[in-house]
Amino acid sequence: MASIIPSWTGVIPAATTQFHEDFSVDLDATQRVQDALFRDGVDGLVVMGTVGENNSLEPEEKRTILKAAAEMAGGRGPIISGVSELTTARAVQYARDAEALGADGLMVLPAMVYVPTPQELVAHFRAVAEATSLPIMLYNNPPAYRVSLSLDDLKAMADIPNIVAIKESAPDSRRFTDIFNAVGERYKILAGLDDVALEGLLLGATGWISGLTNAFPEESVEMVAAVNRGDLERALAIYRWFLPLLHLDADPDLVQCIKLAEQIMGRGSERVRMPRMPLAGARRKHVIEMVEKAAATRPVGAKAH
Image (cartoon, rainbow, N blue to C red; front, side, top):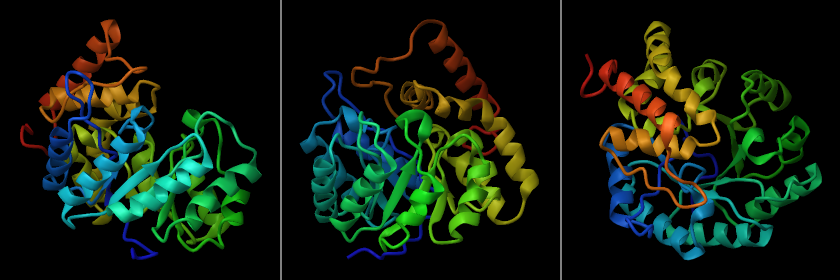
């Protein structure tokens, strides 16, 4: 049984799912991407979150990917699985299966498509939590999922022992302080939107669940380490270098952008499953130019100047 209070700190990238040319899951390539992130110093992985294209995967694919990720990690850090389903019943079943397959925790999203009332949202999260002993992180991302976890919602779930954290992806950094003032240290808060990551860390987030770390893990690790050792000048320098790319994490095509950046940096493939399609035209050219500029001026990684 997993510890109810996990050590979810540092840099925990939301890893990509890799596909063959026929768009079947490339399990070996997915494990290579995950392994490379651990070797570059990240503290854990979220698999099959938004960046991992959860809702483009078939039920058995999700379970196969999770089992392979847990085996690949080999205890190097927690494997936290996204739980993103159309119905509460499916989310409950996936949570049970994820625990049996070796997940160390769950990142639970609201039910997809349907926009719930506050009562329905809390009931969904409560049902998933009651189905497993795994520690749970709630995912708050109002721009993407059209529903926001209110402070009253968080208070209403404070009695659920295995709901232990929040991935906060609202674009307003004031949320970190509002949450703390409302519920104190009841939940760990993790920065979940790349372009307010430093603000979140400085305001009390225990870690950063990142998208662009897939392309530039060493810089991400060093930025968080600099914050933790109090070297804010170093952290700010990396953040300013990184921010043009981090803004991509807030765009609707973030998955395509992140996977293209990953490919340019030699870390994975840009293939995505429909309805997503690879970037094209001016948007593709712009993102390539951004990544290439960042690669030529990187402050930490193997090609740092």
